[in-house]
Length: 323
Image (tube, rainbow, N blue to C red):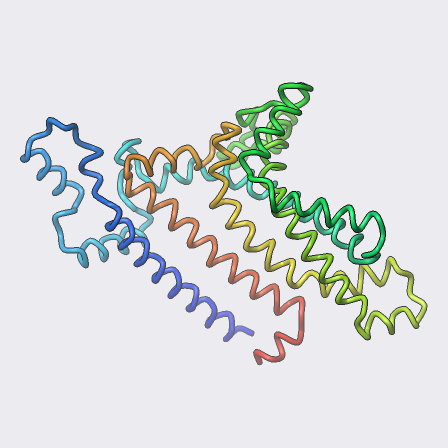
């Protein structure tokens, strides 16, 4: 097990380096930030001075090695727009985005898993058919339309929930968190629900398929023959086997939800990374774009590593095959 963890960690590092190379080359292909940062009336000398200040006059391989050095040191340069270190800028907005993404993933598990268990246990009932039909809406409706619809219903017409902002926060370890206050939780409900509907539908359908497959297996038949109650069969024998594919989806959903929460944050004016990255893309603010994308890459690689480890803990067969 220890040797396998070391091997997976080395693979994760290689994947991160490969993605860093692709990211570096991709940013250099989309254009230069010089035209964005300088006014139209700038002189040729001013352009050359800015190019030298940004290090864009150096060979490409030298820029890449400097990029890797800064990446290891946690220094990816100063934002062209915000005039502060890019890593610090991203990290200052990260708690809000991370809090929203984790709330959305938690909702997908809390809602999607029970719905999938119910639908898979009695797949031909009216309730199961209603659940599976409703899950299609989660896949079909676009996120921006869901967000606007939630605002219209719960903020404009009923006035039950706020439509924008993060609300009151409570500082813990120097970081403000919304979920620690009632006002913060009220502000979080609509964006978290909007962001989680697709994941709820996916977890529901995945769980339903896993339950239907497990119900027809030999170990479930044996458990029924022993006289175990349906609740125990479902919660002990079926759920553990269903959780293996669900862990994969939920693990990847964390990184994916963080990466694609830009639309939701924009609709609900959530003060996360979304607004920063949109402004940075418009201005070709390379340090901020690189810091954000590398954060997403590292997060995906790390989550995949945790998913693999969880696999081996949940299913002894995978662990024995590896050994």
